View 1 (cartoon, helix red, strand yellow):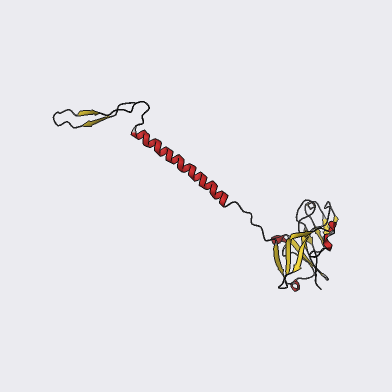
View 2 (cartoon, rainbow, N blue to C red):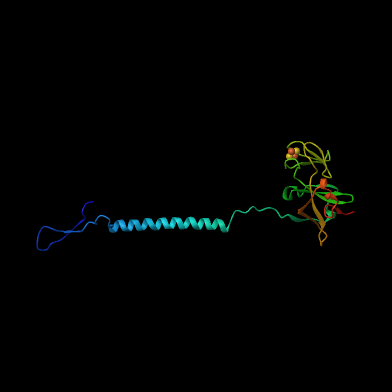
Length: 188
Ligand code: FES
């Protein structure tokens, strides 16, 4: 490393006097090196802290999947015409079906591999576009590979007289659950 020198004016002599500055010995840090090392250390520390803060933020505010509520009011019974009501298919994944004697609520999940069937008014059946399973209005499977009927959700009347659907409770026909309270809402 070259010696660092500093020129100063010597009043008694024309030639400028040179003041020798001691070079750092081996193993010693120059002032410049010291501050460079310090700055690098701080930068590393700041980067590590930012990373930790980011990780902590992800922990405190994780990704959340917002799903529609599992329970909802569908309106008053008198607002439903006979047949399949498709108003809740897209938002809640169910059909509300009105018969002369009452209501039931069908899941829109095909019992084969989970596709969403379509209600075909002219044919009066649900038809799955994936592998051709068909279900009559009650939800019973009649064709295709679906091994069992569509599932039903709990349906009751709320205190205010509206239809209340609770998707937390399901009823499977093949298990005899369509006979249970809540699987069918009697309403004449
Ligand atoms: S998923 Fe519906 S028939 Fe296969």
